[in-house]
Every structure is written in structure tokens, then in C-alpha cells.
Length: 562
Image (tube, rainbow, N blue to C red):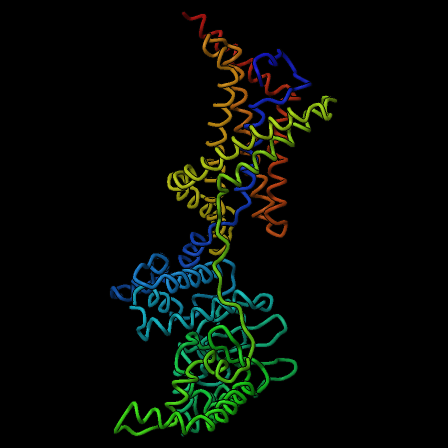
């Protein structure tokens, strides 16, 4: 409020002012920030804290290191020795799985394999067998949990053994001895799935080839398990290979595809995933048939050229396939047609993102303009003649909104470091001791408490600075004279601004985050409406003037001491 607008008592017709613009702009920023999703990285670490296990007395340092899943998650998330694309994929996997633990989608305590694979991702050199195997299995687990709707009340079981108790997964016991079930889960349609994961197609091909002479093999056990499928209790087997660049040629060998078909059962079901494409056994067979047909026409010329390049060496037809059709992509390019269907790659979970200055200007300008029009309309003054005043306040709000956005970017990390950990511990403790929540629920409450606390503190701090600064500028002449009314105005505008911003954060977070189905857009609108409502209500109720009068009276009292 401007000094000339100050009235003793209730002000029923407040005029739009720069202080109102500041409150509106800061509230708009707070409402938008409050609706951002919870930090998935912090939430993932909390999930792996739940996944940690206790070690028996006398356990060696290796066992203790594997048991500390939260520390391994932090290490994996922070690895800098990997190529950028691989490091980002690793972060995606860890974030997805850690959040899945909190969301109750995976039981990390069925055995120790989940923790051991996380430890391998955190500590083993890229390209090592342990790193590759862990990357393949954990990637596929993250993909399944990201894309598949699990049966109600069930969880994914990670690498369970036959006959093993399956904890909270609520899945039927695996009934084939020595069954290979890297992933075991049930989908909403009632189908129970097992999936075997390998790093590359060449690894699966080698496994299939070695099993050819065995009467009891991995694939024969999977075939026996799948054959027990019934209409009332359907079963499905699948195979996943992470690296689509690994040598693919041996997998198309008819003997290997026959063993795959035996394990999968349905030759038309696309249950063989290589990288980012899913294939049926029949599609792999057709690809192999088409590749052989093309090779027959090109093999003589290729052999002559190869022998010229490699004098004295014995030619093998496989050299042609390895050179021209070593991957699914190269094979499809050589054959001029597509097989299978693409499957989505694992994407990073939505990250909280503070508005930039341009977005802040747009939010602040819109908020200030709308508040100005509402105020003028309430006073019966909204008309075309007031367009200039509306434009002026919109521009003022845009400048203040840009400042608020930049302020949030500076303040938010500082506030999170200062109060975030304590707020998270308090939220987790309360959820555990008072509400009796499960470990997963308590961890989620802890992260949510940290998020809300830091957003309230950060946004309110920025809002207070902006509201106080603008009000001080409006009342600069009175402040220069030590006028008590000017001091009261600044105190009142600052208080109203702080209350408005805090209300915006709380309401925006409640609608946009706690009730995510409403969406962030709805949360931002509701948060802004609540924040502006608090500010406007303070005006029309006389609360704002009461604060100003009180502080003004205190100032006069202090002056009387001198």
C-alpha cells in the first residue's frame, strides 16, 4: 500500500500498489515451485536405505559394504568414471529402483542379490562381467516396474529361488527346482512372469548352445514351468538382453531359436527383448531365414574378397554375418525391412525444476495483472480507461517475478542444505512413531516433509525480501523521516507477503504433489489463488491495517523513550 492510501481502521477499498504486485508475483512463484515433483534422487536414496540389511557379528568389510545399500546408491549416482550416456542411464536405473522400493513395487529383502547388484554398479569397473550382469538385470527390473501394472497387492521378486519364501511379493512359490527367474512378477491380468536377463545376445546364444546336449537345462526348466500354465493361472517366460550392439548372429541359429521357442511356448509373443526392440521367436526365425537367403547370393563375392584380405586363413561363413549382420539394426538395414517392435527406453524420473527468470516474469506479470483487475472490479473501476494501470502493474509484476525466480534459484539449495536433513529426519520419525507407518511410508513422508519445509522456507524468505523491499521503496519518504506510519506499512506488507507465500506453497504442494492426479497446473492455480486470497483477505478484513497500526504504535512508543 502507498502511504497516501493508509487509513486507520478497516480499509474496504484497497487500491492496487507495487506492494500488492510483489505479493502476487512472489505467491505465483511459490505456487509454481510447490507443485514440482518430489526429488527422486533423495527419495531413491531413502528407498535404498530401506533396502539395506544388517550384517551378523563378525561379518567382514565386504559383507558390510554390500549391506549398506544407501551408501552404494549414493556412490552409483555420483560415478564420474563412466561415459556420460552410461552414467546417466545408471542414475536413471538407481532412481527408478529406489523409488520403487518406497512405492512398494519391489521387495528388496527376498535375498541379497538386489543389494549385491547395486554394489556392483557402484564399485565395479565398466565393462567387467559383474558390472555388465548387474546393469542388465537392474535395468530390466527398472523397465518392468516403469511400464508394467503389477497385480494388486503384489511386488516384483528380484532373483528368487525355487521354493523360497517370497516375502512381501505375495507371489506363488516357484515350483520347478533350479528355475532361472532373474525377475518374477505378476501383472494385473493375473499372468505370472519370469524373465531371464543377459548383457548381450551373444551371452544368451552361448547359454543356449551349451544347453543343447543337456537333458535338463535352464531353458528346459523354464519350458516345464511355462507348460504348467492354465487359463486360471497363466504363466509367461521372457528373455532380455541389454546391449543391442553385442554380436547377435549366433542367436539366429535355428537350433538356438528352437530352444527359445521351447522355453517361451508362444512363438508369436514378443517376449525376447534386445535393447530397445521386442521380438517374437517367429520373427527371429524369419530374420534368420531372410539373412541366410541374402547371404547365399552375396557369399561367393564376399568370400573372395575376404580371402584376399586374409591370405592363408580359413574362411568361415559366419564372417559374413559378423561383418554385415552383427546387430539387429545392421541385419534389418541389410535386409531392408523391420522386425519386432520398438519398446521405450528408460527415461529419467521427473525432476523438480525451479522457474527460470523468463518463466518467473511470465508468472509474476500474469499474477499481478489478474490481481489488479480483480481489485479494480471490486471497486467498480474496471474499464478500458484503466488499461494503462493494468499494464503498469503487469509490467511491475513481471519484473518482480523475474527477481523472485532468480532469488529462488539462489536460496533453495542453501535452505535445503541448512534445514532439509533435519526436516527429513523429523518427518520420518513422526511417521514411524506416531502414525505407525511402514518403513517405506515413513521414508516417503520424510522426503515429502523435507521438500515442503525447504520450499516453504525458501519461498517465504524470497517473498519477504521482495515484499519488504518494494514496500520500503513505496514508503521511502516516510521512512527517511522516521514516520511511524511508514514503518507500520512496511511491517504489514512484509507480514502479509510472507503469509501469502507460505499459504501458496502449502496449497500448491497439497494439490500438485500430495494429490498428483490433480496435476501441477491445477496445483499452481490453487496455490496462487490461496496465496492471493490470504493477501486480499488481510486487506478487506482489516488485518493488514491492524498490523500496520500495531507496529506504528510500537514505533511511537519507542520514540517516546528518547
